[in-house]
Length: 114
Length: 116
Image (cartoon, rainbow over all chains, first blue to last red; front, side, top):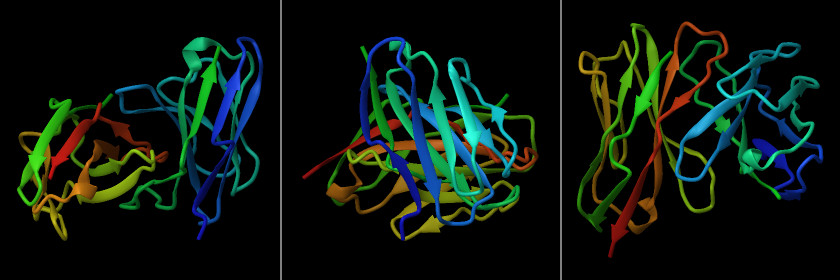
């Protein structure tokens, strides 16, 4: 039972490089999310997709773009990486429609930008 | 916008004893959901317990229970008979019932240490 799968698990980039973080879920969930977690802090929402074909900005969207490729996959792209984007990135999905359903998280991607 | 505050950056408990982690939130909404997530060193985010705002009865999951005080906007987590495996970061999270995106707003977390 894979749940939410994120790739890669670790990545080191140089400032200005681009990168796409991949996320896939096998739970047939409508909603998917990208969060970042900085040291000693809670998760902050970058972008979300309430359903296939829609995406919306979260709390900290600057410097990122997303694509909801299909119902299963939701990717996060850094076009020109900056050291301030060094963080752990989590993808999550949720099946409820305004419901009680919790979000299910991937194992995270640790991204370092030099 | 809603905010979630966890005022205890770190807590410590002796194995087999009870500990309570605090969480307060700010909202003008009447319908919402509250969650506690556990994040061990492995970095996984694991759901511990959840509460619907319209349910007066406090949620319980085995050794984990909450004290939900809606008027005070407080949602504390009680861990009974603490075990070494409970050592982790704990995050409180809020979800509005009115937003179709079902996004979570997280608190800053509490690091729980369990002493043998």
